[in-house]
Structure formats: structure tokens, C-alpha cells
Amino acid sequence: MTHIPRTLHRFDRTAFLLLLLPFAGCAAGGPGGAASGDIVQTALHDFRVEEVADDLVRPFSMTFTPEGLLVTERPGRLRIIRDGVLLPDSVEGLPPIRALGRGARSMSGFEQAGLRDAILHPDFAANRLLYLSYVKPGPDSLGTIAIARGRFEDDRLTDVEELFHADAFGNGTDRSSMWGGRLAFDHDGYLFMTLGDRQWPSAGDLEAHPAQDLSNHNGSTIRIHDDGRIPQDNPFVGRDGIHPEIWTWGHRNAQGMAVHPETGELWQNEHGPQGGDELNLIEPGLNYGWPVVGYGVNYRTGARIHSGTLKEDMAPPTHIWVPSIGVSGMLFYTGEAFPEWRGDMIVGGLSGCRLARLRMEGREVTHEETLLQGIGRIRDVRQGPDGFVYLAIDGETRDVDGPATGIVRLVPAGRR
Image (spheres, rainbow, N blue to C red):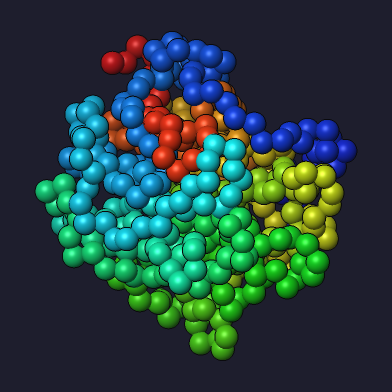
């Protein structure tokens, strides 16, 4: 019998429809309008929000090296923050990257193309290998998402090689977003990446949607070796007509991914449509249901999308957000700066402009607290070597080149 998490027992569809909100921006700034440096009081820890660097354009991801902080900018630049200063020159040596924009009010998929995630090899100190996900130019106007790795030394990238590119075709229009692109290494050194469904319509025969078709990569999570080889214990290796990189399928657009520091379990958060963002425990070979099952409705009309909320052969979410917060980067906190948060999941939000802390017991979310609200569109959440929590704030508009935003961090009250 399918297990229904406690969160979903409390689901009320009438309340859901009343709570639905259209996409709304939020001005960058502190919670409830608090200025940088003001004390923010929360249940377990009080903290200040400090600016780390500004003048970044559409930052998507952050990763810490021994020499500083690397930040990806969606237009196709990799930037360095060192000793609190954003260096003026971007990193040389990146592969060709497709980044397009359609203006401030466009809902086009172009706003999600470009350079996306960046992570270090688990043995980076010895091999200096940096991994990037990005949209590469292709035969059509939008290209496809890919993974490349290179050697990051002396503030430049060399020996760049492509490890993977997706067979995840767009829907034939310029509204072909939902790229995914989050990267993570697990405790065994395998590399995972999320792939979105490329915004295919969730109408008609839902079982025939590309995210339900294992002959392509749309709406999947892939698993490869650190050099791009396919692990022979992947669940679909040797199956005719199925891409052997696929680890899980039936996703819409997973924007956050993290490995539990103790159990080694892989977790993702995933954008729902209007309502119904999900938190999922990722296990090999499972179908996570999009668009057959879910908790969202049509953006404009509120009409039903899914055939139901649960199905026997599809994995249910562990936790849902209704209304959606536009889930983004996430982490499991392990630092010393906020000891009462250790083991908790911290999740960013785009449309909700919100930072949430989730307390978990085993595989169940038992409590959720909003740490920040109204700080801006939080695109990524990372823990620094100082134990502080760093946030990448994306711009309000959907234009590829602006406006400039920055990186902030949460610092315990009383610390400098």
C-alpha cells in the first residue's frame, strides 16, 4: 500500500484553492522590510543578514573553494568573490553557453536558460575539478542542458570536457523552460543532476507526457560517474529504449538537491504548477508522478491538472507547499554557528521570497519555520566554511541581464 505522509493527510482541497496566489514579485531586503544588519528573531537562533557582495547578475549557484566563493551568473559567467570583494573579471575557459531573455514581463522559458549549477569534486583539494551544468547551444533555438568539468586553477578553467548532454527536447515554442540543472555528489562519489520537463503541456493523455517517457531525459534525475561513465547498477541499464543514465523519473522541475550528511539519502525539492511544490526522497527507479498525480492546478483558471493526488505505482512527496513558494536551493545544516539547526533542512523560495527551516524525524517533516520573508527571490542556499548560511538573491525581472543583485549571509546575532 502506498504510504501517505502525515503532511498529506492534512491536505484540504477547498483550503488549497482559497490559498492559491498568482506569481508575485517581492522587493529585495530584509524580512518584513528589515534592513541589512537588523536582528532577526526566530525560534531557535537570532541572526543578522549581512551583504557579502553586490552587482551580480542573475546569480544561480554558489560553491566555496579554498580561495574564495564562486558564483554562477545565468547569462554565462562564473564570478569570484575573494575576501569580501567581487573580482571584476569573470573566469575564463567556460564552454559555450546559451542564455537568452525576453524582457521584464515575459514568462518565456528563456529566462531559465544559461549557466546554472557549479559544484566541486569530492577530492577537489587534490584534483581541482569543477563541475558545471549549463544550457549548451544546439540545433534548435534553445539548445539542451549539459554537464562539463574542468580544472579550476589560477582563477581560470582549463581542460574542459563535456560529460553529458540531455536528450530532453523542448515543446516546440519559446516557452520551453523547466531546465532543472541542480548537481550533487553523493557519499559514494556518484554525480546526480536534475532535468526538468521542458514545460510540455500537462493536458490530454497525462500518461503520454514526456516526463512519463523513459526514452528521453525530460523530467528525470540522472546518475553518472565523475567522468561521465554510466554506473552499471543504475536501475534501467540494459533496458531497450531507456536512457541508462536515468535514476528517477516523473519530475516537473527539481530546483534543489542535497544529500543527508548522516544517512547519505538524496533529497530534492520540485516546482509544482499553481500550488503543490514538493519535497521528495529520491530512490532509484521510482516514478514521482508528474503530471499524472500532484497537488497543483492550472495557473490561470485553477482547473484541475492531475488525475489524482496519489497513485499506487508513483512515489508520493514527503512534504508539500500550498501555496507554492517556488522552491530553490536547499541544504542540510551541519555547522557550528547555528547549533540548534544542525540536521535541519533549509530551503529557499523564489515566488515566495522565503527562507524555510524544516525539522525532520527520520524521513518525515515534523515542523516548518519561516526564517526570512520578503528578502527577494532566493535562488540558492549554501553553508559556508564559517558555518554561516549564504543566499544568492535573483533579480525581480525575468530579463537575462538584470537587474544586479547580490549574495547575503545569515550571521548569528552578536557575531562579527
